[in-house]
Length: 244
Image 1 (spheres, rainbow, N blue to C red):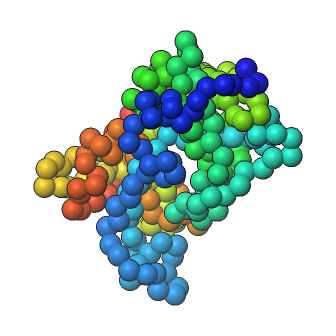
Image 2 (image 1 turned 45 degrees about the vertical axis):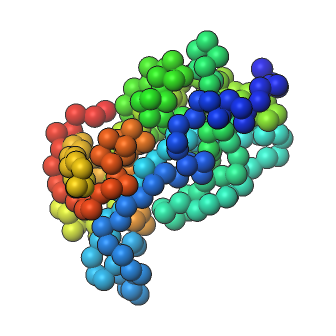
Image 3 (image 1 turned 180 degrees about the vertical axis):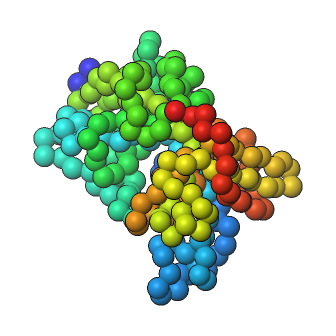
């Protein structure tokens, strides 16, 4: 399976949903304006600036797998910076192949590289592939199903690593202090719109020194709450801690 004659553009037109080709998804922010000098990362006018972003299907790769898929000596080439500093959507994409040759073409690779390759899907993506992908926090891939990744040069058989990423919020320690939470806690996200109001429980806190306040939900969740039409987003301490 080191080469393929499949017309990726044709397949893409048939099987991809209306997800932005960049793999970055859509974003709603609770406030606007620039950060003033001296504020913590991502703060505006002396307070946290909450962003809620839809994270479309994507792939994380190891250095080894980058070379197998794209050729010896290959490295990820940044195409677009993500909101979190140091992270980016790469120019490279791969085909994700599930059982019975079901596939998702042109799935974006995100950088930088990681210690273990991982595929993050929405529930409808996993159904399309025929993979029973569990909800997991990123990096918690033990016992998860695998798939085949196909690049322009070679292919990789992943024996595990396909997940539905649990919803989570990136924040720095100033944000955490503001909300009264710590790394690993659970929070609640409320999305208000004129058509529907949705509350998401079990939003995992991922706190570090440099992160900017941003909630990641997947495409199914973003469509369910109609994030495009939201008039208000709110984050508060809470959540039952049910997700693994």
